[in-house]
Every structure is written in C-alpha cells, then in structure tokens.
Length: 228
Image: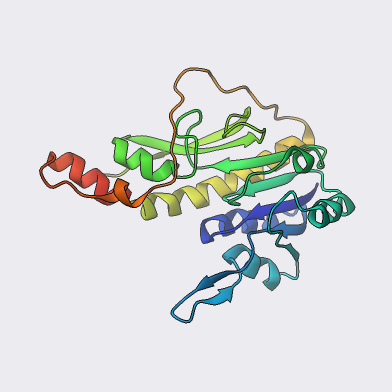
C-alpha cells in the first residue's frame, strides 16, 4: 500500500522504521508537527520523525494545523491508501480522515478502551496496572474511540518508569502497526468496535499531577514517581 505516516516524537520512530523495512508498503510522505524550539539556544529543531524521514529522502509535511488547505491538497495529490499514526500530536479533521481509502490507523499505547488520551503509559503506571499494551485502531472523530484492529500486551515490571515502559511499547507496537498494515492490505483484518465498558481516560500530565505527597502510602508515592 501507499502510506503517509504521521508522527512526531522519538517514540514514533521505531514504527516508521518498521514500515520502511517491511518491504510491502511505500511510505510516500511523513506528516509531523512543525519545527519547535529546543536546547539552550532555543533554536528551531525538526521533530525526530522528520529527521528520520529526511535521512531516507522521504517528503516531510509540517502543517501548522492538519485542516490547512495546502496540506489537504497535497495529501489528495499523494492519494495514500492508508495513513498510519503514532503520537502525531494534533486532532485530525473529517476532511483529512476521508482522504485515504483505508482511513487513518493509530498505534495507541494502551489496551483500549483503557486509558484513552494523551498519556496512557503514565496513567497506567500511576494506577498500579500490572499489564498494559498497545492497540491499533481506526481513527474517528471521538477520542481514541474507533474500532480496534489488533493488540499486543506488555507486563509492567516493578521498577518500570514511564520511559522504560514506553520504550518497550514503541518497539512492540511497531511490529503490531506493520502487521496491521499487512492485514488491511490483504483483507484479513477487520476492526472490532471497542466495548462500552472499561473506558478510562488518560489526559496530558500536568505539573500538579507529578506533585509527590510524602504523607501518602509508600506504594502511592512510588507509582507517582515512576509514572511521572
């Protein structure tokens, strides 16, 4: 299939690499967030996904907003069959969702419908979950509510930080996303609606969420520190 990959941070790079290495799909372009200030000099720096795509000579699209008409026009010109997504960082409008024949398929780092939102790994650790995982699902206009193609599970180790766990999920999820693209292409995978029960939310972590209350039980303190 012809793919346009959408992603921004380092955690999305393994999935892009897996698609490039699959041999079955053409990554025609990458969509990522615009360059952002970084480092002590606060110079504009391209995202890790943009840097990896540029190394491979892949076209990089950096719309300020994914509803920008120039971006939508270019996406229509590319005419992708599917748009795999990992931590892109912006809401996709219906006008963008309707362009690829097989839609946009997101790799999300939780076992949906648990921990829908921006920080599933952190919230899973803070809640004391023993098992988590990654899911691929069809993006719709709701928050991580689309039907699921596949999942992988990952045991949460007693000393895991959010960084440790996210790194493992990034690589396990990369294989899942590549396999999902294969299944969509050959027609063997059909998305299954998420159950209505078991929905939990994982909003972006705020400064107050990371506050450590040392009068709390030690188990709670440990979870907050490892999660944040």
